[in-house]
Length: 195
Ligand SMILES: [Ca+2]
Ligand SMILES: [Ca+2]
Ligand SMILES: [Ca+2]
View 1 (cartoon, rainbow, N blue to C red):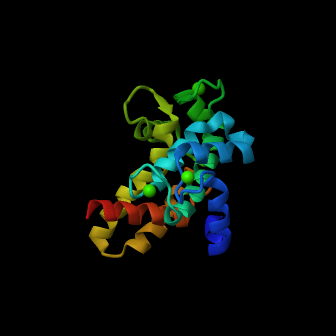
View 2 (cartoon, protein in one colour; view 1 turned 90 degrees about the vertical axis):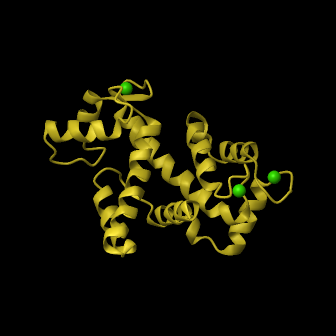
């Protein structure tokens, strides 16, 4: 979505967020604009915080104009992930146990998985082995595990765009819609960070 905005539209939107006009966005500026424009984020402040942290590539605590498109994409993407998470979390306790995971497997796009295969997937996501999936673990599975797979693949084959393509198809099983552009952004940021 953000990639569809022109440079000027992006700049105008950025200025709307930048309420004190200092050319960078603090977390509180972002949160207040997002909550004002999209009240449905009220129960999902975690999503805003997560998107803000991800988009701040320079790690200076502010979102600058060059990080802004990533912020918008991340907001959109995490919002969708959170949507699926809440649907599967039937008792609304903010955690997904294996029963909920099994019952929600269609929402998670895990079609035609046997119980044993589902258990394997569940354990993969449940990184701290607590028997429950937290939202953090869930979207880490949705993103960073695959990013690591991608960098491994790219070392093996020297062709990471192709590896990304394949993994995005793979990941579609888990998540309704992978934002390809954002995934690429995250990858390039990560590659820069590891240089
Ligand atoms: Ca500001
Ligand atoms: Ca920054
Ligand atoms: Ca639950």
